[in-house]
Structures are given as C-alpha cells and as structure tokens.
Length: 94
Image (cartoon, helix red, strand yellow):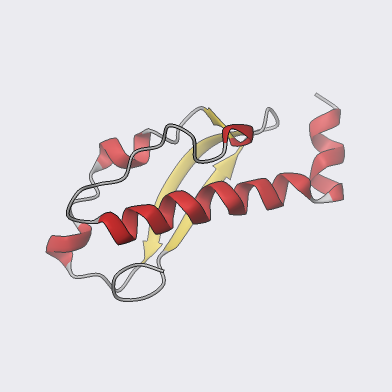
C-alpha cells in the first residue's frame, strides 16, 4: 500500500528464480511523488534472486512509503509464486 492506495506492479521471473523485469502498472500517487521512483529504483530488482528477499534493496527518500510497499510486495509476491507446486516443478527442470 503506497501513500494514496495500492500500487500494481508487474514482475517477470525466470526459471532460475530471478526477477527479470518490473513495471509499475497502476498507482494513485501524485505524479511528483511517484516520479521520485526513477529507473534506478526499479533496476535494482533486475537479475536479483528471489531467495534474497528484501536484503540489500534500497528505498527512495521522499517516496518512502511507496518504495517500501513495492519492495515488500514484489519480494513476497515473487516468493509466493515460486513456492507454488506447478511453478516449483518447472524450476526443478532447469
């Protein structure tokens, strides 16, 4: 939950259990506030193993609530997806 409501983020994962893409899809934050979340914030997720959780991920000063929400939701959501039996079975095939 960001400062003004939910933030919808699309995350892509590969068979190695890494985040390969991240794109904000929907948010209610004002443009100035959400604009503080620049490409660098989102790029820190790329190539990152989901197994690392939130460790070492930075938040953004001035957009702390939104950036914390994105970090939490992406890492926890990705871990839940990778733990699904059908997904886990595909990961084991690599």
